[in-house]
Image (tube, rainbow over all chains, first blue to last red; front, side, top):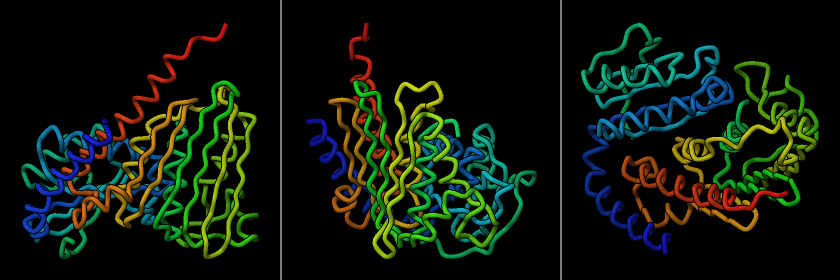
Length: 127
Length: 189
């Protein structure tokens, strides 16, 4: 019974999601969390959970994705924020406690948090 | 690592890196026989016999960015100190199965921990991969297959915020039914 209810819910979500899919690809935000062994050991999963919680609490709709190790293991957990038309910013050594400020500054106010940022990558088209 | 789910996440990430498109996860907790089995099977590129032998060595990695890989050796140690073991079966081109066993009540056995978070981290991976997850605690079963969900969603990705929240909710709910199963069990004399 619970399962059936879930599938019905899913169908409703699909219909809603399909409507805003095209808008999202042009204006969307992607948050990318490194989830290699090094990231996991440094607490990347908890950081991802904190990001999901913060986005939900603030009703911000952003894509969250995980990637493997990028080779900067000592700087994990690494969090990249990519917004359409802007450069991708890489933040290092992010903890769950840093997440509310990161979301507030970068996503809400649009400012890069300089003290945590370690790099800027060229803008590319959001998939 | 503090939780078994972190080891599981690590192995799932290995499977994704090995190009798997589908990963089966079986967690069996048999409280009567006092065993816990974690089995992860992927359809990635697999490993040669020579690599299987080397992979338990902490200084073995397929990566080129650094010269240590710790995932499997850490999991092996976690299993061994709880009276269990870690066995790898693999066929190049077909996939890999890693089966890990633990004495359930062993004092050194880390808790399973936040398995929902581990599954979410893989479902949100940039490489689309399907998880066939089955967790049993005695007679209680929670099964979740993301390929069924992906089919239902058509062109909407699992990482879509609305879908993501729904997935999280479904996984939490499923795992919660198993916690009830564990708690309702009468205490042994």
